[in-house]
Amino acid sequence: MSDTQQMQQPVNDLGYRSFTLGKFGFRRDEYFSHITWPGGSHTIAVDRYLRALVRDIAWSFFYGIVNFDEVFGTINHYGNVDVFAGLFSDGYRKSERYYVENFETPKVRAVFEAICDDWTSEGFDPFAAPEETGSAFGPKHGSNKAAISRKRLTASRMVGMKGDIPLRTDQAGNPVNRHFLDVPQDQPEVYPEPGFEDEVHAFNFFGYLSRSEVTWNPSIVSVVKNSLLCPTTEEFMLPVIHGNDRVEWFIQLSDEIHWDVQDRESGRPRARVIMKAGDVSAMPANIRHQGYSPKRSLLLVWENNDAGLPELYAKGKLKPYPVEF
Ligand code: PHB
Ligand code: FE
Image (tube, rainbow, N blue to C red):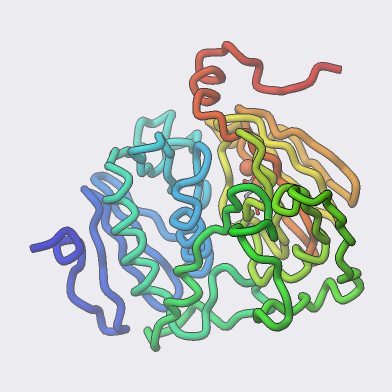
């Protein structure tokens, strides 16, 4: 039997399969995802679960920790992944009831992809804003493979350059979002010297972002060595609680996002950050955070992709914050 056959169990009365990953079990009913492990169990509303799951897969387990909620999540070790329950919850830790299993990355990806595919019915897009998609609830009906298999857009130099990710247009099926109809769509005029046509480039960045159909899904629009500009459009809440393994910078480009910032290990509250258009913040390397965007907004996330950073922070060789005032 293949890995995929082994991890799948028979279909339940509602049409959904159950899955196993190591000693973790996953099953869904009309409203909930139920997770079990030796000595414990946990329940997450299935819409929240699928929104977190699809991002954990699309981001290849992201930087550091992806908490689906206060109990369940993954830690990326860039080659292998810890899947945990209760590891970052005070109560589970103090009573030593947490559970962690480590897997090679492809194994977690295969199981997570199979769950996401089986549990997402027709009409529900876990990347879309709640106002712009159907319901995740109820018995299984159809599937939505196109929505869940979106790849993260990663430019190799900059969006719109020769051979790179194309600009978004009406013709390509990327209309301006309903909340950004006031964003100008003109493009800059660029006159490179002969011979530099493939090197000198500019595009309307706000116009490009205003045409994003997904929420809370940073795409990489420009790359200079390890400096990645990862803008995204946000609406409703970040479907994961991100535990950083490095500093991340946020520049709020429009509207506003409210951030809950907590201690990464325990979840104890550390700060509330209300970011309005033009505000800049640096999220420390030892926190976790979740954002709330009351209406669709434009956010620039600036990531340092240096693979050596997590160890430098973990060993205390770098301070968890980038600036001292
Ligand atoms: C983050 O965890 O820093 C993050 C993730 C997705 C977003 C924005 C921020 O869309
Ligand atoms: Fe983050």
